[in-house]
Length: 144
Image (cartoon, rainbow, N blue to C red):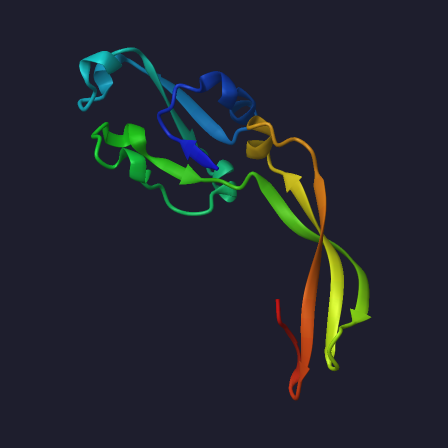
């Protein structure tokens, strides 16, 4: 998920602001020296707080589709986690079709973060997966 600093999505970020995850600062139209005439409306600058940075997955960057446009810091974005993924449970282990192999069934649980909730990912989801293991002389290894 992209989280834009300098976006005009102030209402969308209100729950994140009230939880102390972001700050939203209104800026006058002349505060951006790179603004084109059609952009001269008031804007807002949204930034992650220290508390919000725990959900960041990297450093701020300029999205590729905006790299040829010069808006100054208005185009900066950062990836944030919309969910925390945890191992739910191992639901079964069976012998594979080939000798020395096993198939494990397990569930992953996706729990929405406050950012996920702000962008309409509100429900915890459980998904079942299969993993194949092969027994080597030094132990079991994940095949796929």
